[in-house]
Figure 1 (tube, one colour):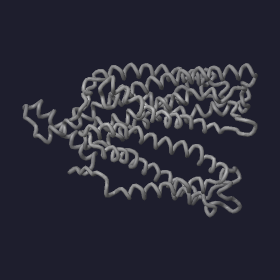
Figure 2: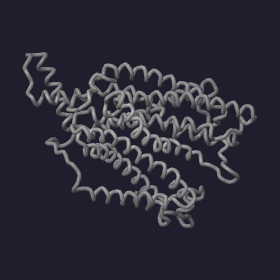
Figure 3: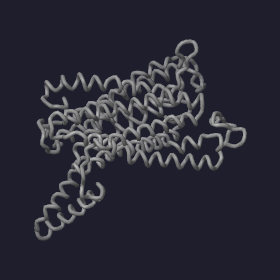
Figure 4: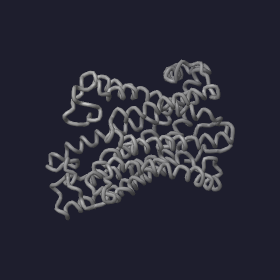
Length: 426
């Protein structure tokens, strides 16, 4: 973030061009600015790869899963972790985007940089109070590699002479089996990740075509509608944690209220409903464009309020409260204890693969529909058919949901010392 801030300073620009005008077409960046900018982006990606899975796993490790009170608190931790993430997203969307567009990119990058410095100091202040779990293995990857080798060796020995494996080899084989059994759940959540990626892409393009005026002077930026997702999450997480879980606990006798897979499944249902609503809203938007005679005027604001799109953003937020947090807790809890950061990395890979699969689907459909003369993703959204795409995603989500239910019904939770018995429940 420091390098991003430096890349936006006036010293890196050509004469007559400042960071306050860096978005102007007349302002061209210098080679040094471009170099620093791209290196900083790669550093951010590297930092996120280390921070996202490990920080969350380390936070959850502060709660003892074998202590009944701390076990309940650990489940609640995932709710409040995501609450904090969404709070930061909401502030960034509302404040930083305004500063970057109206004041300057230098200050827009500088503020998050200072926030990161403050966060690092706060993290270090707690060093003496953290719980640490030591391991003899050099890394989770080394442990997993040994487990795969043990699994292969055990398979060969059992086929040849029936020789019993050592206790270590048997333990390693159980670890790799513990990871592999998560892949059916992983695979049946890919379409959810594809749907998740639409809120920041096509939804924003649709919003740009609507009447975004609030009052006589205020005009809402299209991307600002994404704030409704974060706000919904921030409002509903306390309701879920303080009202829904205690109520469900009385009915199910589970400390978490409902099981992790039930929570994920509920989120998938809400994602399906969100796509159906998005398809219906897009059908109306296209109808308004036709009725107003604005089909060939893509930059004209349609006589349709931006509030029509709010329900799908709210449904996305509700879906995240169930599916996103449920997936985080599931992939942390169900991997072998020594591989928990790797489990959260596996959770994050759902969205990496989902974004790639989304790009593939869009490219394939775009190429196929262009041949017939009318692309579903035309630059002129009034002649595009995003409604068809949303119906397709809704259908794929329905198929995914059916597969998820089947896989969940046969899934057996990892055995652990606990006061709840989740072993044969979805």
